[in-house]
Image 1 (cartoon, rainbow, N blue to C red):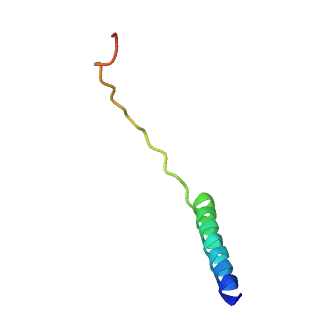
Image 2: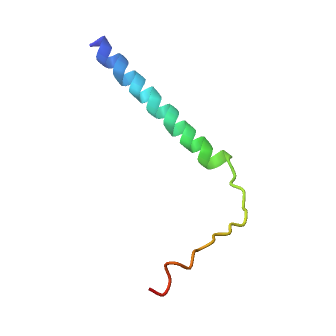
Length: 47
């Protein structure tokens, strides 16, 4: 039984670390605004 407990503890710890990383990225990193230009080829139009 100690191996099952250790496995569950490791899985819970990894899940908590992943959740913490996602939370930190969502709340502490601000995205930069910039203009984006996309060129569209005319080959597909008017067929």
